[in-house]
Picture 1 (cartoon, rainbow, N blue to C red):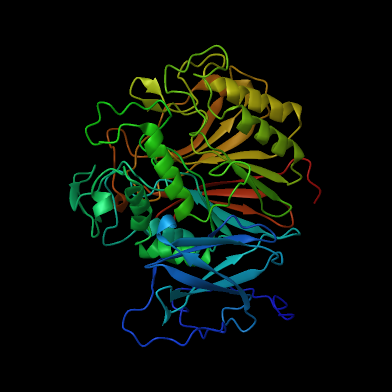
Picture 2: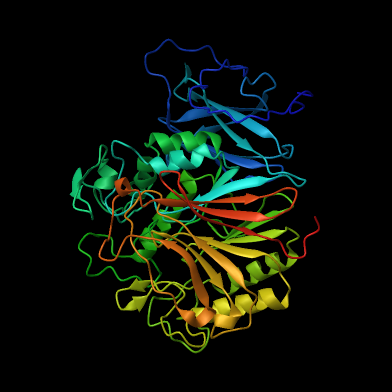
Length: 519
C-alpha cells in the first residue's frame, strides 16, 4: 500500500485487450460453470480533477463488483477498493468517485464481478484508464463535440468513426456538448440518406426501434451507443465530461413541450419523460453527484491551474419556446434560471484559472427555430436584447464588470462546425468584452446548416464548414462530421483551437493569447 502511486507512467496505452491481466485482488474461488458474470458495455470515466475521478461499468446480472486502481497497467502496485453491488434498481450499473489520487498521474482501474447468486462465479476483469489533472502548469489537450446517433444514422459497418479519430489525438479528456443520445430518434434497418444513398444500420435494438418513453427505453438509448467499438475504445482510455441538451429527452425539450398531437408517444406528460430521461442520464454516465441538488447537470470542473470548465444546463430551467421577444426576465424568457446564473457568476469571479471555458449546449448567436418559435438564445430580431437574450446580456455585462479574463465558449448542437468572434463594436448590445465561441459537431448524425447569425451580440463568422446550399441531413459517410481540439501550452499558456473533421483533417485553427497571465 505504501508504494502505491510512487511510479509514474508517461505513455498512453490502449486498454482494450489488457482485460486479462492477472488480478491481485483476493477473489472467491472461480466457478467452472459455463455462465459467469459479464461486463456488458465496457467502462467509462469522467469528471476528473487533480485528486479524483469517477469510474463506471455495468454487469449482466446482480453482482458484487470488485475494484482496483494502480499507476501501471500491470497492476503491480494495485490498491483495492471496497466492492459495490449492482442491482436492477440502477439497471445493473455502478459508478464510484475515487478520491485521494495524486495529481497529473496515469490511473488504471480494473473491475471484476462475482455473481450475487453464486459468489464463486467470477467474471473476467475489465480495465480502463484516465489521467488526473495537473496541479502545476503542464500542457493540456482536450476534444469536444456533440450529437450522437441522430437522424436515423446508427451503427453502420464503419461504426462511429469520429470517436476513433478523436482518440488518435490522445486527449486528456473529451467534452460531450450534448445530444449524447437521440431518445426521440427511432432507427430502421435501412434508410435513404440526405445525399440519396442507402444507409444501413447493422444493429437496431428493440429500444432503438421506437421513441423512448419508459425508463428502460431511455436506458436502451445509452446501451445502443455503447455497442460501438470506437466509442468503447475511447471510453477505456479517455474520460468524458458530459452535459445534455434536448435529445436526451425529446426534440426541442422544455417543460412546456406539448405532446398531445404526437402519435409516436403514448406517454403525453413531458415531465414524466424528462424524469425518466434524467435518471437514465445519471445512471449511464460517469457524471458526478451534487448532494445539494441531486440530478443537477451544471457544474464546474477545475482541470489544473490553467483551465476551469463551466458546464451549463440550458434545458432544465428554461421557459417555453416562444417568440422570444419579452422585454424583461420572467417565466417566459428564463433560460438558465436565477440559481444557475448566480452560481456561474460567483464561480467565474472566483476562478483563478488562466482560461475559463464555458461549455454551452447551444450556441449564443445562431438562430435556431422550433417551427415558428425559437429554440435557443437568439430571436432573429437583431436589436437590443429581448427574451432569452436578456439573461445572456446580464451575464456578459457581469463578466466585463467583474474583470473576468479569458472566457471561451464551446458548443455543438447545430450539426456543423464554425468559429464565431463576438465584439461589442459590431453588436447592438455593447456592454461586454470580446470573446470567441467555437462550434463543432456532429459526432455521428445528420449534417445540416449553416444557421443565420443574430447581430444582437455582434457575432462574426470567421470560419464555417457545413453542407452546401440545398444539401440537408447528409450521412456520416459523407464526412461532414466534426469535432474540436483545444491545446493549452504549459509554458506560454496560449490556447490553440483546431476544428477537425472525421477524416482527421485540420480545417481551421487559431491561437489565443491569455490576457493578464504571468508567463
